[in-house]
Image (cartoon, rainbow, N blue to C red):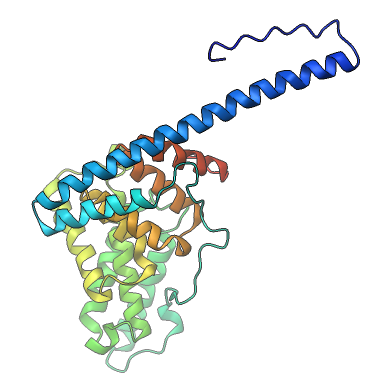
Length: 294
């Protein structure tokens, strides 16, 4: 190991001599491992300092305020990262304090302005949408989910009053979650394994549809609701705002399922090309018992 040669001649030794030799051998390997780990941390710390300085020189010459925000977000994340001490996901995540669950129309009182038959149609659409858009079969059901979400969003937008569309009303939350499901399903279309079976034939039209669906959700929620943070993070990420995506992820780490927080952090660092923190993030993901097949 690393040029270290330790003769092992314990086979014929017994008693205290053998034990002492084994202790010396284990201590030697432990010392080598500790030295290698310390060297890795030193190299990572040097890399981080150089990267922070490099970003700092670019900030004054940022081509736009949006670009400046992105550079500052990347710099902020790097400054907080201490090599070898990257945090794991909170053990008690997700913290659902203050989060609003998706209401079921079937459990709500019918608004007086909506006819009985129309209300029943809305209930049926939501029921079918929830049955289609499940964790287990989300990818397989994307066509159905997108169509049902579009139909339900259009019907709710047409039949709900302005007050009923706000987040002060349960029906407003139904509309917001429907938009979230539509945006998420559209975003899933970009995944390589999905594109293989359902290619995006018109990229410009697809981009327009995804951005519009996301925009309607953000306008309704003011972009401040933790319930929809993962779609917001994905939209930052796909637009090249990976630093802002990282900062959004970190700011809401207590509200995200541990697997998705650890996986998305790892993937963002890889996409940024930041190898030292990426390797540490990948290690944290595996140490938590996750892998990409589960």
